[in-house]
Length: 68
Image (tube, rainbow, N blue to C red):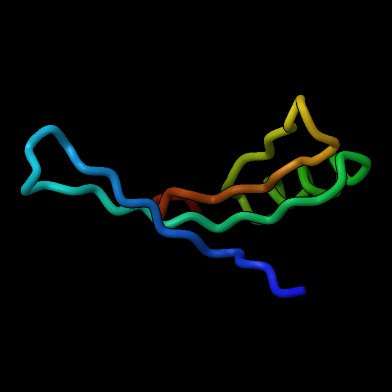
């Protein structure tokens, strides 16, 4: 099974000539791995961990290029 880890999001402003492009790196794991996923934030010094309340999934996500 192949999974994507990198995503691009394109949002258009009310002015149709301007668009915003945002890149995103995402890893999802079972919620039992919460401590491991939160340690990625500390170790890498970037990103955030999100728990999904309606699923037994947690996600580590990096969106900003300025994080280091």
